Amino acid sequence: MSRQAEIFARQAVYCDGRSPLYAALCRRLAADPRVGDLASDLGWDFPLRLLGALHYLVLAQQASWDDIGDALVTERAFLTRFTAEQDVQTNEVQRAWGLLPGFLSIADGRPFDLLELGPSAGLNLVWDRYSYRYSTGQWGDGPLELAGADRLPPPPELLRRTVEVARRRGIDLSPVDATTEHGARLLQAFVWADQTERLERLRSAIEILRTDPPALLRGDYVESLPALLADRREGTQLVVFQTASTMYVDRSGIDKLRSALEEASRREPIVYLGTGRAPEDDGYSLDVERFPGGELTRLAVFDFHGEWLDWGR
Ligand SMILES: C[S@@+](CC[C@H](N)C(=O)[O-])C[C@H]1O[C@@H](n2cnc3c(N)ncnc32)[C@H](O)[C@@H]1O
Image 1 (cartoon, rainbow, N blue to C red):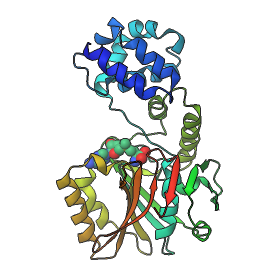
Image 2: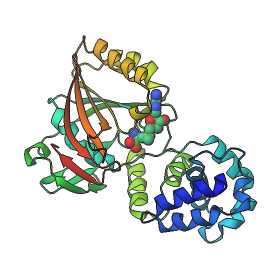
Image 3: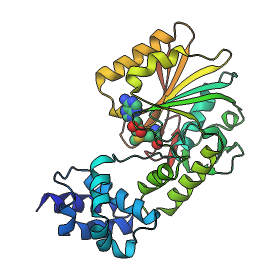
Image 4: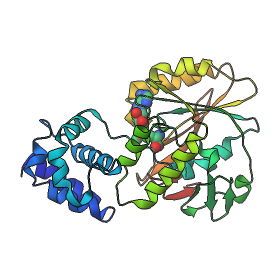
Protein backbone atom coordinates (compact mmCIF):
# COMPACT_ATOMS: atom_id res chain seq x y z
CA MET A 1 0.00 0.00 0.00
CA SER A 2 1.38 3.45 -0.88
CA ARG A 3 1.94 6.09 1.81
CA GLN A 4 -0.94 8.12 0.33
CA ALA A 5 -3.33 5.15 0.41
CA GLU A 6 -2.26 4.31 3.97
CA ILE A 7 -2.79 7.76 5.54
CA PHE A 8 -6.07 8.44 3.78
CA ALA A 9 -7.42 4.97 4.60
CA ARG A 10 -6.55 5.53 8.27
CA GLN A 11 -8.22 8.94 8.25
CA ALA A 12 -11.31 7.42 6.57
CA VAL A 13 -11.69 4.93 9.44
CA TYR A 14 -11.36 7.78 11.94
CA CYS A 15 -14.08 9.72 10.09
CA ASP A 16 -16.45 6.73 9.92
CA GLY A 17 -19.51 7.46 12.06
CA ARG A 18 -18.43 11.05 12.69
CA SER A 19 -18.33 12.51 9.21
CA PRO A 20 -19.79 10.44 6.37
CA LEU A 21 -18.75 13.16 3.90
CA TYR A 22 -15.07 13.05 4.92
CA ALA A 23 -15.00 9.26 5.28
CA ALA A 24 -16.16 8.85 1.67
CA LEU A 25 -13.87 11.62 0.47
CA CYS A 26 -10.81 10.11 2.15
CA ARG A 27 -11.49 6.76 0.48
CA ARG A 28 -11.62 8.50 -2.89
CA LEU A 29 -8.55 10.67 -2.23
CA ALA A 30 -6.58 7.58 -1.13
CA ALA A 31 -6.37 6.47 -4.74
CA ASP A 32 -6.36 9.80 -6.58
CA PRO A 33 -2.98 10.33 -8.34
CA ARG A 34 -3.42 14.14 -8.23
CA VAL A 35 -3.20 14.08 -4.42
CA GLY A 36 0.33 12.65 -4.33
CA ASP A 37 1.49 15.48 -6.61
CA LEU A 38 0.50 18.11 -4.03
CA ALA A 39 3.27 17.26 -1.56
CA SER A 40 6.67 15.66 -1.65
CA ASP A 41 6.43 14.51 1.94
CA LEU A 42 3.12 13.06 3.12
CA GLY A 43 3.04 13.47 6.92
CA TRP A 44 0.42 11.70 9.08
CA ASP A 45 -1.73 14.85 9.23
CA PHE A 46 -1.65 15.53 5.48
CA PRO A 47 -5.26 14.29 5.03
CA LEU A 48 -6.45 16.76 7.70
CA ARG A 49 -4.49 19.56 6.06
CA LEU A 50 -5.93 18.74 2.64
CA LEU A 51 -9.48 18.42 3.96
CA GLY A 52 -9.00 21.78 5.71
CA ALA A 53 -7.70 23.36 2.49
CA LEU A 54 -10.61 21.97 0.46
CA HIS A 55 -13.14 23.11 3.05
CA TYR A 56 -11.52 26.57 3.02
CA LEU A 57 -12.12 26.73 -0.73
CA VAL A 58 -15.70 25.48 -0.38
CA LEU A 59 -16.40 28.16 2.26
CA ALA A 60 -14.91 30.78 -0.09
CA GLN A 61 -17.20 29.39 -2.84
CA GLN A 62 -14.18 28.52 -4.95
CA ALA A 63 -14.86 24.77 -4.86
CA SER A 64 -17.76 22.38 -4.38
CA TRP A 65 -17.92 19.10 -2.46
CA ASP A 66 -19.71 17.71 -5.54
CA ASP A 67 -16.62 18.16 -7.68
CA ILE A 68 -13.49 17.98 -5.60
CA GLY A 69 -11.59 16.47 -8.53
CA ASP A 70 -11.96 19.80 -10.31
CA ALA A 71 -10.46 21.72 -7.34
CA LEU A 72 -7.48 19.33 -7.24
CA VAL A 73 -6.60 20.61 -10.71
CA THR A 74 -7.70 24.25 -10.79
CA GLU A 75 -6.60 25.08 -7.22
CA ARG A 76 -3.41 23.04 -7.26
CA ALA A 77 -1.14 25.98 -6.31
CA PHE A 78 -3.35 26.99 -3.36
CA LEU A 79 -3.67 23.40 -2.12
CA THR A 80 0.09 22.83 -2.34
CA ARG A 81 0.86 25.99 -0.37
CA PHE A 82 -1.90 25.58 2.23
CA THR A 83 -1.06 21.93 3.00
CA ALA A 84 2.65 22.78 3.29
CA GLU A 85 2.34 25.93 5.41
CA GLN A 86 -0.86 25.76 7.44
CA ASP A 87 -0.80 23.60 10.59
CA VAL A 88 -4.11 22.11 11.65
CA GLN A 89 -5.54 24.85 13.88
CA THR A 90 -8.74 24.47 15.84
CA ASN A 91 -10.55 26.25 18.63
CA GLU A 92 -13.22 24.12 20.29
CA VAL A 93 -15.86 26.34 21.92
CA GLN A 94 -17.70 23.40 23.46
CA ARG A 95 -14.74 22.90 25.84
CA ALA A 96 -15.99 26.04 27.64
CA TRP A 97 -18.95 23.94 28.78
CA GLY A 98 -16.53 21.63 30.61
CA LEU A 99 -14.48 24.55 31.91
CA LEU A 100 -17.22 26.80 33.30
CA PRO A 101 -17.82 24.95 36.62
CA GLY A 102 -14.04 25.02 37.09
CA PHE A 103 -13.97 28.81 36.75
CA LEU A 104 -16.91 29.14 39.14
CA SER A 105 -15.32 26.88 41.70
CA ILE A 106 -12.10 28.93 41.88
CA ALA A 107 -13.76 32.37 41.90
CA ASP A 108 -12.91 34.28 45.10
CA GLY A 109 -15.27 37.21 44.56
CA ARG A 110 -12.85 39.57 42.82
CA PRO A 111 -13.10 40.14 39.05
CA PHE A 112 -11.03 37.72 36.99
CA ASP A 113 -7.84 38.73 35.21
CA LEU A 114 -7.76 35.92 32.62
CA LEU A 115 -4.60 34.70 30.92
CA GLU A 116 -5.08 31.82 28.48
CA LEU A 117 -2.13 29.74 27.29
CA GLY A 118 -2.64 28.52 23.72
CA PRO A 119 -6.03 30.15 23.07
CA SER A 120 -5.89 29.72 19.26
CA ALA A 121 -8.54 32.35 18.32
CA GLY A 122 -9.54 33.09 21.93
CA LEU A 123 -13.09 31.75 21.71
CA ASN A 124 -12.76 30.22 25.17
CA LEU A 125 -11.39 33.50 26.53
CA VAL A 126 -14.87 34.97 26.16
CA TRP A 127 -16.56 32.04 27.96
CA ASP A 128 -18.51 34.39 30.23
CA ARG A 129 -20.40 35.76 27.18
CA TYR A 130 -22.04 32.38 26.47
CA SER A 131 -24.87 30.73 28.39
CA TYR A 132 -24.69 27.22 29.81
CA ARG A 133 -27.14 24.45 30.53
CA TYR A 134 -26.57 21.55 32.95
CA SER A 135 -29.11 19.18 34.42
CA THR A 136 -28.68 21.00 37.76
CA GLY A 137 -29.11 24.54 36.47
CA GLN A 138 -28.14 27.22 34.02
CA TRP A 139 -25.54 29.94 33.99
CA GLY A 140 -25.23 33.18 32.04
CA ASP A 141 -27.48 34.80 29.50
CA GLY A 142 -25.32 34.99 26.37
CA PRO A 143 -26.80 34.38 22.92
CA LEU A 144 -24.94 31.08 22.41
CA GLU A 145 -26.11 28.27 24.69
CA LEU A 146 -23.70 25.42 25.41
CA ALA A 147 -25.08 22.14 26.71
CA GLY A 148 -23.93 18.54 26.87
CA ALA A 149 -24.28 15.24 28.69
CA ASP A 150 -23.46 15.94 32.32
CA ARG A 151 -23.23 12.35 33.52
CA LEU A 152 -22.10 13.72 36.88
CA PRO A 153 -23.44 17.30 36.96
CA PRO A 154 -21.94 20.27 38.79
CA PRO A 155 -23.77 21.17 42.04
CA PRO A 156 -26.60 23.72 41.65
CA GLU A 157 -25.07 26.11 44.22
CA LEU A 158 -21.94 26.38 42.07
CA LEU A 159 -24.03 27.52 39.12
CA ARG A 160 -25.50 30.32 41.23
CA ARG A 161 -22.10 32.01 41.53
CA THR A 162 -21.44 35.09 39.43
CA VAL A 163 -18.12 36.33 38.07
CA GLU A 164 -16.95 39.42 36.32
CA VAL A 165 -14.01 39.53 33.92
CA ALA A 166 -11.75 42.58 34.20
CA ARG A 167 -9.20 41.63 31.56
CA ARG A 168 -8.55 38.83 29.07
CA ARG A 169 -5.19 38.03 27.52
CA GLY A 170 -4.03 35.05 25.48
CA ILE A 171 -0.70 33.97 24.07
CA ASP A 172 -0.32 31.52 21.22
CA LEU A 173 2.42 30.43 18.80
CA SER A 174 -0.06 30.95 15.94
CA PRO A 175 -3.01 33.00 17.12
CA VAL A 176 -5.96 33.15 14.74
CA ASP A 177 -7.55 36.55 14.25
CA ALA A 178 -11.23 35.64 14.03
CA THR A 179 -12.13 39.28 13.41
CA THR A 180 -10.81 38.89 9.85
CA GLU A 181 -12.57 37.00 7.07
CA HIS A 182 -9.52 34.78 6.58
CA GLY A 183 -9.23 33.93 10.31
CA ALA A 184 -12.92 33.08 10.65
CA ARG A 185 -12.80 30.95 7.51
CA LEU A 186 -9.66 29.17 8.68
CA LEU A 187 -11.28 28.15 11.96
CA GLN A 188 -14.35 26.87 10.13
CA ALA A 189 -12.21 25.08 7.54
CA PHE A 190 -10.76 22.73 10.16
CA VAL A 191 -14.21 21.71 11.39
CA TRP A 192 -15.47 18.76 9.38
CA ALA A 193 -17.90 20.17 6.87
CA ASP A 194 -20.88 17.93 7.70
CA GLN A 195 -20.62 18.54 11.45
CA THR A 196 -23.17 21.32 11.14
CA GLU A 197 -23.86 21.73 14.86
CA ARG A 198 -20.16 22.35 15.58
CA LEU A 199 -19.96 24.78 12.68
CA GLU A 200 -22.99 26.74 13.82
CA ARG A 201 -21.62 26.92 17.37
CA LEU A 202 -18.29 28.14 16.04
CA ARG A 203 -19.92 30.81 13.88
CA SER A 204 -21.99 32.13 16.80
CA ALA A 205 -18.92 32.21 19.04
CA ILE A 206 -16.97 34.15 16.41
CA GLU A 207 -19.76 36.75 16.26
CA ILE A 208 -19.71 37.04 20.05
CA LEU A 209 -15.91 37.38 20.16
CA ARG A 210 -16.05 40.09 17.51
CA THR A 211 -18.19 42.35 19.74
CA ASP A 212 -15.06 42.97 21.85
CA PRO A 213 -12.08 40.80 20.87
CA PRO A 214 -9.59 39.70 23.53
CA ALA A 215 -5.91 40.65 23.32
CA LEU A 216 -4.03 37.82 21.61
CA LEU A 217 -0.26 37.87 21.65
CA ARG A 218 1.94 35.82 19.34
CA GLY A 219 4.66 33.95 21.17
CA ASP A 220 5.81 30.94 23.12
CA TYR A 221 4.17 31.00 26.53
CA VAL A 222 6.96 28.93 28.06
CA GLU A 223 9.31 31.84 27.35
CA SER A 224 6.89 34.72 27.87
CA LEU A 225 5.06 33.65 31.02
CA PRO A 226 7.29 35.45 33.57
CA ALA A 227 6.72 38.81 31.84
CA LEU A 228 2.98 38.20 31.47
CA LEU A 229 2.66 37.24 35.13
CA ALA A 230 4.57 40.33 36.20
CA ASP A 231 1.84 42.49 34.67
CA ARG A 232 -0.83 42.28 37.38
CA ARG A 233 -4.06 44.22 37.80
CA GLU A 234 -4.73 45.51 41.28
CA GLY A 235 -7.95 44.21 42.88
CA THR A 236 -8.39 41.28 40.48
CA GLN A 237 -7.91 37.52 40.73
CA LEU A 238 -5.30 36.34 38.25
CA VAL A 239 -6.45 33.09 36.62
CA VAL A 240 -4.14 31.32 34.21
CA PHE A 241 -5.80 28.58 32.16
CA GLN A 242 -5.33 26.31 29.19
CA THR A 243 -7.19 23.58 27.33
CA ALA A 244 -5.58 21.04 25.00
CA SER A 245 -2.38 23.03 24.79
CA THR A 246 0.28 22.10 27.35
CA MET A 247 0.08 18.51 26.08
CA TYR A 248 2.25 19.80 23.22
CA VAL A 249 4.92 21.10 25.62
CA ASP A 250 7.83 18.86 26.70
CA ARG A 251 8.80 18.05 30.29
CA SER A 252 11.37 20.84 30.60
CA GLY A 253 8.85 23.37 29.23
CA ILE A 254 6.27 22.25 31.81
CA ASP A 255 8.86 22.58 34.58
CA LYS A 256 9.64 26.09 33.35
CA LEU A 257 5.95 27.02 33.35
CA ARG A 258 5.48 25.77 36.89
CA SER A 259 8.58 27.65 38.12
CA ALA A 260 7.27 30.85 36.52
CA LEU A 261 3.93 30.37 38.31
CA GLU A 262 5.69 29.58 41.59
CA GLU A 263 7.99 32.59 41.33
CA ALA A 264 5.21 35.05 40.40
CA SER A 265 2.90 33.74 43.11
CA ARG A 266 5.30 35.00 45.80
CA ARG A 267 3.84 38.43 45.13
CA GLU A 268 0.23 37.23 45.20
CA PRO A 269 -1.31 33.74 44.89
CA ILE A 270 -2.14 32.44 41.41
CA VAL A 271 -4.73 29.88 40.39
CA TYR A 272 -4.00 27.73 37.38
CA LEU A 273 -6.83 25.82 35.73
CA GLY A 274 -6.04 23.37 32.98
CA THR A 275 -6.74 20.14 31.20
CA GLY A 276 -4.53 17.13 31.76
CA ARG A 277 -4.63 13.42 31.15
CA ALA A 278 -7.59 11.67 32.74
CA PRO A 279 -6.69 8.52 34.69
CA GLU A 280 -8.55 6.26 32.26
CA ASP A 281 -7.50 8.37 29.27
CA ASP A 282 -11.13 8.69 28.16
CA GLY A 283 -11.16 12.49 28.22
CA TYR A 284 -9.39 15.45 29.82
CA SER A 285 -9.02 15.82 33.54
CA LEU A 286 -9.82 19.35 34.69
CA ASP A 287 -7.22 20.26 37.27
CA VAL A 288 -6.71 23.26 39.46
CA GLU A 289 -3.25 24.05 40.79
CA ARG A 290 -2.75 26.70 43.42
CA PHE A 291 0.52 28.58 43.61
CA PRO A 292 2.59 29.00 45.72
CA GLY A 293 3.02 25.30 46.31
CA GLY A 294 1.34 24.05 43.16
CA GLU A 295 -1.07 21.78 45.04
CA LEU A 296 -3.18 19.97 42.45
CA THR A 297 -6.86 19.07 42.79
CA ARG A 298 -8.79 17.25 40.10
CA LEU A 299 -12.22 18.84 39.66
CA ALA A 300 -13.70 16.79 36.82
CA VAL A 301 -13.14 14.71 33.75
CA PHE A 302 -14.67 15.90 30.50
CA ASP A 303 -14.78 14.73 26.90
CA PHE A 304 -11.92 15.84 24.63
CA HIS A 305 -14.41 17.98 22.72
CA GLY A 306 -16.58 18.88 25.72
CA GLU A 307 -19.52 16.62 24.81
CA TRP A 308 -19.83 15.06 28.30
CA LEU A 309 -18.79 16.00 31.81
CA ASP A 310 -18.17 13.99 34.98
CA TRP A 311 -17.96 16.63 37.69
CA GLY A 312 -16.09 15.43 40.79
CA ARG A 313 -14.72 12.26 39.20
C1 LIG B 1 -5.15 22.01 20.07
S1 LIG B 1 -5.02 23.76 20.10
C2 LIG B 1 -6.16 24.13 21.38
C3 LIG B 1 -6.72 25.52 21.23
C4 LIG B 1 -7.70 25.94 22.34
N1 LIG B 1 -7.04 26.03 23.61
C5 LIG B 1 -8.88 25.00 22.40
O1 LIG B 1 -9.01 24.27 23.40
O2 LIG B 1 -9.69 24.99 21.47
C6 LIG B 1 -3.44 24.05 20.89
C7 LIG B 1 -2.99 25.50 20.81
O3 LIG B 1 -1.85 25.67 21.65
C8 LIG B 1 -0.90 26.49 20.98
N2 LIG B 1 0.44 26.22 21.58
C9 LIG B 1 1.02 25.01 21.76
N3 LIG B 1 2.23 25.17 22.36
C10 LIG B 1 2.40 26.51 22.58
C11 LIG B 1 3.43 27.29 23.17
N4 LIG B 1 4.53 26.75 23.66
N5 LIG B 1 3.25 28.63 23.23
C12 LIG B 1 2.13 29.20 22.71
N6 LIG B 1 1.12 28.50 22.16
C13 LIG B 1 1.25 27.17 22.08
C14 LIG B 1 -1.06 26.09 19.52
O4 LIG B 1 -0.55 27.08 18.67
C15 LIG B 1 -2.57 25.91 19.41
O5 LIG B 1 -3.22 27.12 19.08
